[in-house]
Amino acid sequence: MRQVFLDTETTGLSAESGHRVIEIGVVEVIDRRLTGNDFQTYLNPERKIDPATFPVHGITDDFVSDKPKFSEVLTEFIDYIEGSEVIMHNAPFDSSFINKELELLGYKDRLEDLCEIKDSLTIAREKHPGQRNSLDALINRYEVDGTSRDLHGALIDAKLLARVYLLMTGGQVGFFSKDDEKRHGVDSSSEKFDYSKRKIIHVSSSKDQKEAHKVYLEKLSKASNKKLNW
Image (tube, rainbow, N blue to C red):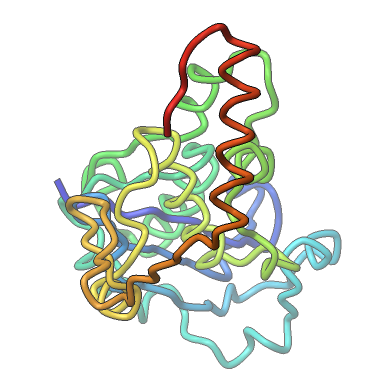
């Protein structure tokens, strides 16, 4: 099944209290490889952004004032996610906002009707019980590079979540897109580097180095009571 990793940025913390989506970011993973076929859009929420959220995402009212409304991207968004496994960190939060947007437009389906939803936070809690399992904590735990992330952004966080998820569910597999594979000489299906074009360096030992190695082996042989030869 095609997997997509989704994150949102919002005007506030509760969809039920009238807060809206201001950014959607989704990244595609096929065969445990990031394809680079991303979906991202900023949205005009048609309301003020809670100033308390600005330090989190840095998105201002002025910035989103000329951005499309959710109704204008609805078809493209549905086409992108429909039939996929959608993975979100703390899925009820993002789902509630997407579903509220669909409800406001009178759209009959909800996110769970359009795709299969999986919560990576639930998986993290099962794998790391009693530990912090926020996305930030998982980025640190799995040593995912998040140095370029000064503020939260839906697309940035979706990409980081995809990398964390791949590590959390089976190791470092398929982090490279097709273009990246060409640049780095990586075959993500086998996880091996192509060394065929790399120069082989041959090093010859000097007479002094050989003699020093012989003396060292004699000391090791004496200490271990075994005849060592390598």
